[in-house]
Image (cartoon, rainbow, N blue to C red; front, top):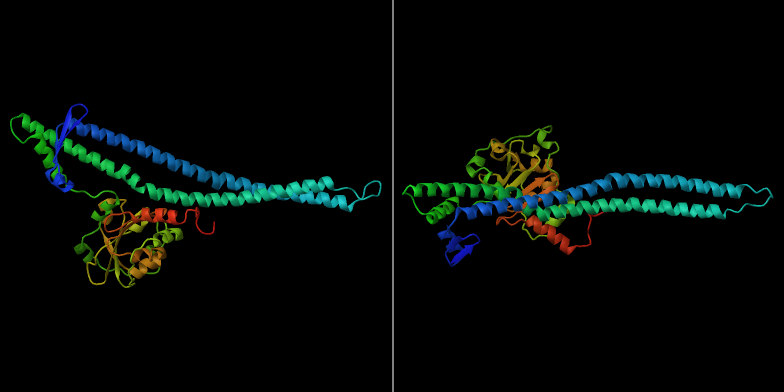
Length: 376
């Protein structure tokens, strides 16, 4: 099958199934086509990052306006209008207590109207205070849902596309090297060079799936000595990553995932001091030794540098330090979770599906009227 691209670039691909095409590779007729595709990727990533940043800024600006300006303004209005109501009540009381110059009881019609209006204004301010609180809770919940839905796009723009650009740069360099050799009368053709480079690149994990490559191998985990913790250990101090909120647990519970019983005496392998990083990830693997829970906790912040030393800590101690992780730690092998300042950022199953995004969409679809967490 032949495809002619703009500018006279010709690409050839074998007809048949995608597996057959992957095995045979692509035939590149022009290195310029790769450069043009690289430029398009960079432009797309820049536009997408600008759009996401603009949306995040709008959300933060609106939330800040509600939490600071509107909350303070209407709280002051409640106080001022309450004082005005008291002054109006005093005016009515004065009219009724003291008689006029003619000895008759004075009319308090105007004062009663003013009092009624003052009470209405005070009630309006009190309703505004409640409305602002509800709006803050609603916006916080919707912001979390939004972040979950655009997480894959954000990962693609910030990680996958830069990696793809680097791969394209390497591919162009390889192809130009082959061409340079070929112009000297030796080497292989451009099509064969492209096929060779494509096969050498091989499949690569993308997005949060790449974190699995940071997890230590079974033999490394098996050699990790157990660590006994004291009550004042830093492990029991507040962790930098945020807790898993109640509504996040409820959203995840709507998915049909078989849970496993927890044995507090089993060990969890943890990268040294990783909980002090702004993000951590938890991966459940097959046990590497007797008494191994299969869980590993590390941080993606420093890559391999964050995984130079490990501690084997009781599962019971992990739950004592972070009770919110008890439900998470009952997920079966193959699951990988990422936690950041907002709690759950992603949950991937064994097939690499982001079930957290599915959980958020399922929660919104089943209960569209629940725009805010319970109690709002």
